[in-house]
Image (cartoon, rainbow, N blue to C red; front, top):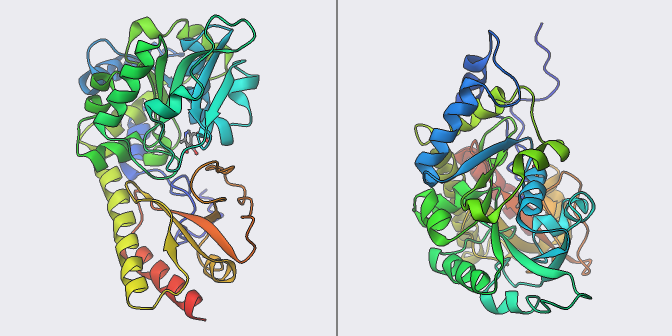
Length: 376
Ligand SMILES: Cc1ncc(COP(=O)(O)O)c(C=O)c1O
């Protein structure tokens, strides 16, 4: 019996998590089904996964599939620092705004946050929190966590990442990369994955799958074996060890084979670029009074401000979230709950996300809805 409880034609620009799983991923799950396989990661798929990740990130890597991004971040960071360690991160980082305090409560890690205008840390911004080593009264800053692409849709260049890792390492700090949207960064930079991770000095990576077409599944990827300890034990005690791991591994293999990861990310980035350019055109031609952009569009997300009544009218057809105070220090993230409202009741900052399955028609329909709402 087939049970369908939703309209398969419904579309939204709220989150890349709203999209379903890519058909090639579903095929991979079906192919991995049937018969018996050893549980907890000793299956044929997880064994192959190590080769697949080594092909993308280098022979030294170790990969640990997990259920979700919060679990990947918390487990990765916990493996990188001792009990007394602290992590420097942007105040708009998902680990700070949208993980329910899990880094603090599950891993016992103090986060030392810095406001950033565009979601990106720099060596100078890191220095605002990287001090006090040897002072027993201060949580010791021993790691930096950055997000690529950032929570504000921006993308670090390879040089910016290298400057961060060189600076952090010179201070004895390790560098974690939250790569929930790492594929969108590769698509934007037009660079292989290892060029801005392993080769740029990143120590441990949370590799994102779900936002790029997986049913569910991410991975902690240790790029520098000297920078992480105890991951197998931490993954289990953080409740991220899948018994039927073959199904996460099979999805990750499919994602990283035949360039599915890149094709999907290129597509979602291209849809965001198309949406942005159509709206810029509408602004120039006077069809979008009151619309302005707050961030560069360097991935699959667009950040904009518009009058609140117009935003609410568009939302009657397409869901999306309010985002919060413009640029930096955002209290919002990527969960499914409606976002908190901007201080200014008349205008709102919003986030519009494209996905691997966003179509030209979706973009055209959304642009028309925005123009109509702004002109009403
Ligand atoms: C930057 C970032 N990191 C991590 C995650 C993973 O979160 P989840 O635990 O919901 O999979 C998300 C998802 O919203 C995200 O946007």
